[in-house]
Image (cartoon, rainbow, N blue to C red; front, side):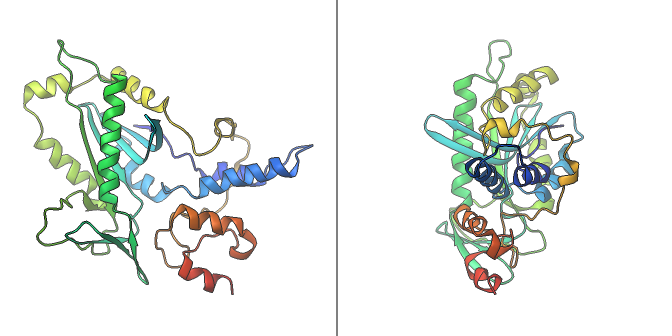
Length: 292
């Protein structure tokens, strides 16, 4: 079941970009445009949400949270997708590279491979491990999990980095680096199912299994900590009467021309120069072509 959709819906973005009100000054207008740009820069794409929803949205045993941001103890965590099962299993899903292939070496260095470019990126494996540690701290400190006969359930948090199944991800043949978390997006359900089949004995399942009401309360506690990318008052706007603003939405976590993932800095640069890039985002090598 889907508990939370991504913040950056195309209807919300269109609303912020087109909203006009009597007496609105240039500062207010610019503030709305900047909020829309931040949502456009979100790395949680519709395509990734749809793939994950296709596997887990209809199941009563799973709750799906898209686009979760939490600040905890001077640390911040941003999760593209969080899956929570009725057996207290948490799966963090990083879908930033779902359109691409990754190249990893034995030293932990990582590159993203597109049709035209090979670009060095910060290790998604390190980010995933960091996110797992922070989420574990959040759950433990907030005491979100119930106890059974005085026994606390095991906090089972795992994560996966999704890549394009049509492109070959290269991993080191022999290395101390564990790259098993990097999988093709079409293998997510099978991988999670296999993990569950190799899970706990019946005692562990009894302790960790929680009912629907408890599972719902757990997710609501997590959502109460969510920090939207834009001010909360802009997230609570009623959008039921603005369907006419729907427009084609570009996946702004990737270059519009070559498909390579791009940083928040580069996306913001493109949005600051909307007249030049026509509202689209381009990586630095493609910007020269886009300006012509």
